[in-house]
Length: 140
Image (cartoon, rainbow, N blue to C red; front, top):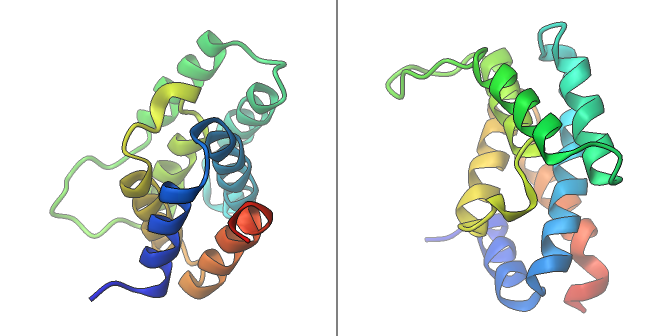
């Protein structure tokens, strides 16, 4: 049985043109990660600056990739472990540091991002509502 959030993700993937979806997705990821930035290590402020600059066209793909590599060194890679809120926040930030062509499996990526943000302490229903708001005008 799918959740309302899963249904929304599927609808966005079906109805929203890829380029527009990617721009809105990046904005959603950045806005959401700014709320969990307090869980990031000190380097996290720089990661978020680069993600925002890239979204505005002011940072290169290379800068984004370098920041992603740096951030990935802070993650816990044991899939059997329950991620700490801090580790979940770092893994969520990796989504803001993904190049434009990095969302091939969009619905899976969005579901994982929401799961990570929930593990970082955010409310799932609120996350789904924000996602709906981010795409509201193109879903009507």
